[in-house]
Image 1 (tube, helix red, strand yellow):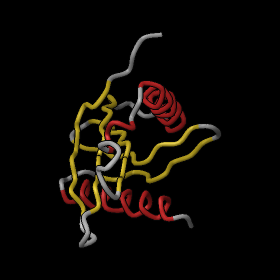
Image 2 (image 1 turned 135 degrees about the vertical axis):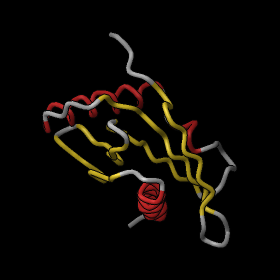
Image 3 (image 1 turned 60 degrees about the horizontal axis):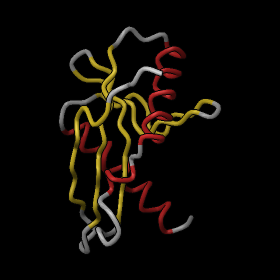
Length: 122
């Protein structure tokens, strides 16, 4: 596995641990269905929380959350819609971003951005 893939995978694992430690129930990690993919789908307090995880090994080029572009948001929203329909879920959906930056000692700085973006009308 390429180094950047390993960094991303370890970041997703750490993000799931973070969510669990903060009272979320993690329903799925790396859910895929056809062209759709969601990093983490969790549940808390009556909300389905779709989490996009962005991990970086440094801040040399950009902060991790800056990689969540409008086009990426649209794909996540479409995938979340497919997820809700697939499982016939009655929950409201919130879209979060968890940005992780790996420190030299192997630990992470974690920034959980709730309501990072909202579904838009087409």
